[in-house]
Image (cartoon, rainbow, N blue to C red; front, side):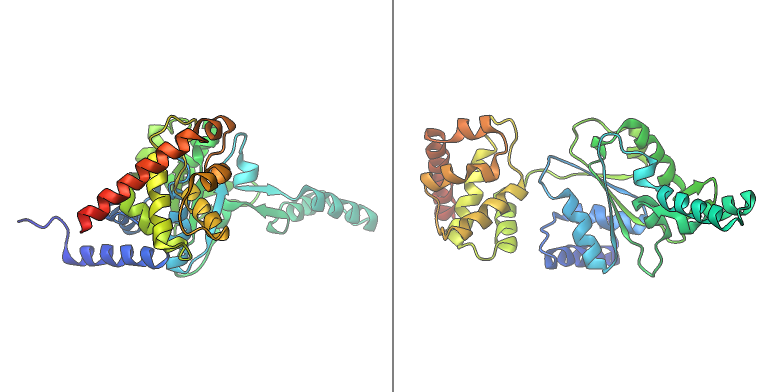
Length: 313
């Protein structure tokens, strides 16, 4: 059989997958390969998927594993260059002008040169990432790009092409060692193909039972085995219900931690009804699940666990 990757690449991917596991991040091999290639080829990694499936966490654990800085740009509607790249410290500039006027030594050309210097520059995440020094570049997380306007997406496309930014008053800032770029999207809108072509793409889906169970036991070690199994099975069943917003892995972990805080070692309908708001963030979803639906979901979850137990036996 022909081997499609070299032994050294296989070993590196295995090591990366284990490193992520050591950081309590359970990554499929296909995701580990995508991260490896992003590092190897120095290409941005575009992660798409529903909210709460672990996209942002990839950047966090990667920065931790590489022992480098994590620089995060949280996207939102109306985000522009002033918030993402740089802006001038106008209040300090105004104060400096007043001081120069008071001293009677103001010179227009000299004042302009001094006022538009790095001393008065506020560096935002994108510029910080380009300027970062050190043997290992920082991880630049551009989080929830789908929340930003398309105009900002166009600017980002230009920045990612050359990893440089020009400030008219100061010149061009170019990264000596380009940052490791992780871009995430919850797909509330489509990102333009031109930007996606600059990136390696990976879709992170909801995990299956075994993977989610592994995540729960890694992240919430205080949970009993039976509680972890029941919580995972219940959430897996819950995702099949007709909900406005399906709970992600983040909600599974929050719920498990809350149940441990309530000294629960197993699930029962009453405690589920009392804590549904930890998983479901819409009143209509909580109301549609609470009561008989809770009991039906729990019964199916328990039956699923029984079937798995029978197969193991």
